[in-house]
Length: 637
Image 1 (tube, rainbow, N blue to C red):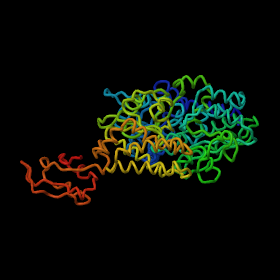
Image 2: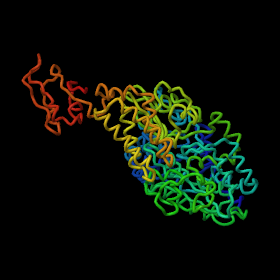
Image 3: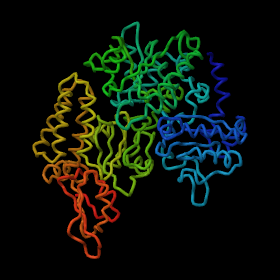
Image 4: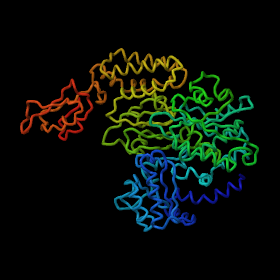
């Protein structure tokens, strides 16, 4: 492909894509130029697919034909819009009207009433986009979106990820052309270095410096690899980028390859991501057909191609040396460092390894310049960060905010606050490798250094919100159960240490803990941090250490008082029936799975039937009795 051919496609598709970014009068004018009255975007990400977006899409296409307007309306299946809790999602442009939790029945109404007759179905819209006076705002004006700055996610929910021409219409592959035709290898590395971008995979190492080391390493063969082995519980940033904008990763890997002198790349992605794997495969084939991968790219003599390697889902393979060992066909286990991958990586050759989110920024940095990117964020953490927002939060989904945005802004404004009027208690960042940030630090600006200072870390971007009903000892136990399962077992500190930490936490949550167990936890955790082979073992104790630092009183309550303050740990709970409130209906007894509830001889004043009581020796503490009682007579202690 020549630059003229690239620009021709860009110009042909530019207005089509702009309609999806520009709302109101300008958007209407753009729509008139494209040949389509309206464009309907349906989320095709994994989240929305799991809630039925395929059936929504089928119903949409069928009804358009029934109404005879299929040639007037462009239907686009996109990647993730971000507001995952409201899926399936459908947006109509140029208005930007946002239909949430779409159903096939609702979509048929939208086609007839909105797309054909011009009457928006307000009752089907996301409620925040409809004001009391009946006026409608676009999704970009809602609390969830208005504070976001979408760089890595700029095309997710905007373009068809299986159509290379739509990517080209967003200036796609212009960064690669610029790098290959007007920049030296050192120029490219300097641009990335000056931008200040740091690795988004967890450690936050400066990306430009990593590229600089790889270029300086001696060797005729070098490699570029992409880490798409996203394994943190609750994290789905990289998956969503691959599903929604796979060409951005391909372009970035080609730029990195040119910068360091590599000609072969690998994307290591877990097999549990079938949608991402499919769309990446389609994108790779399209790029090859257009001459954007393969031999003599843009006629510059530069050769580069990419292969996909599927991972079996081992969390440890997110660690760079374990990932490379797996690509080589061996069991995924970490290797001692040094030598670092930039010197001796894949197949013993210099290798640059970046994660998906890091790469999603690269082409834009090359196109727009380092100064543009470094103008966002904080002094030590430039640009934006994508978070997978989950847990006890109203708006579950993907968010991208400038570095330095406070935790309060993310939780209360973008996230919509804690459901059911509960209080914010803590936020877990960095997944199993991170730590818990207590509520008193809610106004802390989020960046690499601040999170480390609080005993946590940025990690890949999982952000789990916890409310007052969360037991912090139980949270530590949850993450230790995960790391015990995922430890490769190669080094003793991690293999034995994680199991021993879990045993102590089990002991505490079962009511058998002793005060010296807290000292044992801290001592063992610090030994693991200093002696484990890789980051999995070194960071596995972080959830324990951070909760001990901020919520030690909860550990002490489990040990001294034999109580779980949050009412979570079953061994320390009991369910009881308040006889004065019980009307003797027997609903609790009929639903008890172990027949632990029976009538007593006591009838409360004003009641007709004897009160019920729970046999504590039989009770399995499932809570069914409490959920079935309509009179609040069952209490949890």
